[in-house]
Amino acid sequence: MEKDGKDLFVVILLGFFLMLFMVSFIVIIVVIHRKRQVQNQQKILNLQAEYEKTILNVELEIQEETLGYVGRELHDNIGQLLSLTKLNLSSSKPEKIQEGRHLIGMVIKEVRALSKTLNLDWVEGISLREYFQKELNKLDQIGFCKTQFKVEGQEIKLIKEKKLVLIRVFQECLNNAVKHSEAQLILVSMVNTSDCLELTFKDDGNGFDLSVPSSGLGLFNLSKRMETIGGEMVIQTKRGTGTEIKLTLPLSIA
Image (tube, rainbow, N blue to C red; front, side, top):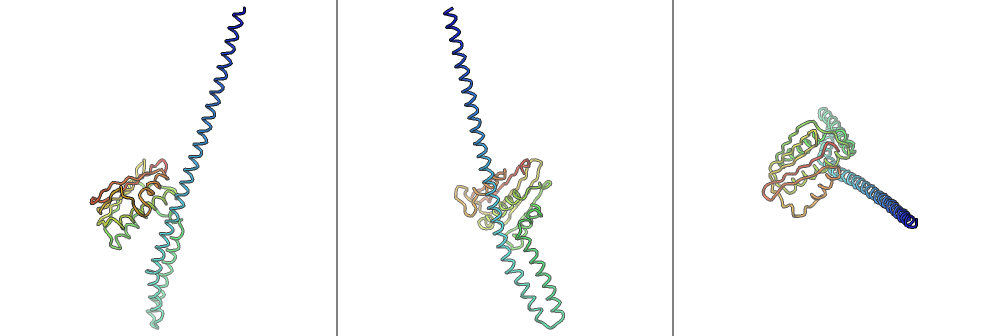
């Protein structure tokens, strides 16, 4: 009987320690799980903050670019039209007065067009294809270099914020080509597939060494911006062989 009592005591003791171990194990698992939940929530908050910061910076940069464009248009285009208007309206000839009235109409039209560019809502009203073609046409018109634009597939509809990022990255890629490449030809292709949007820039310019830090926004910042909206940027270049930049944005997160 005494031996049976000891065996029972040992069994109860072992059971107690086993139960204590299981409870402790469950508590530890719950604590670890909760800690991971908090860490994941913090990561999500950090990503959201980075995303919002990126969008804000992009909006500010595009507004600065737009203000610069508006300033140039006011000085070069509208200023010239107003000077011509003044000359024509100063004349007593009916045909000159009529021409002056026509020029006033042109000035009003130009000012209205400029006022629309000051509001970033224009981004929602224009397709990427239209915008890219418009920007490339500007390079053709000023005679900087020849450009070619190729589009494949049906354009993917993006939300305003992601479209802003793509537009800003596109602007900076063109700016880098204009400032540094000395290219004779710039090729841009936009391929829309069922999986993603691919935007590729190619130029026949100087190329550059990727190991040398860049100026302006910098390639690293452009790459980070693509990552913020779920995309990526790949660059292939070396001195004397031109540059190719490929931007990819998966459709599933577009």
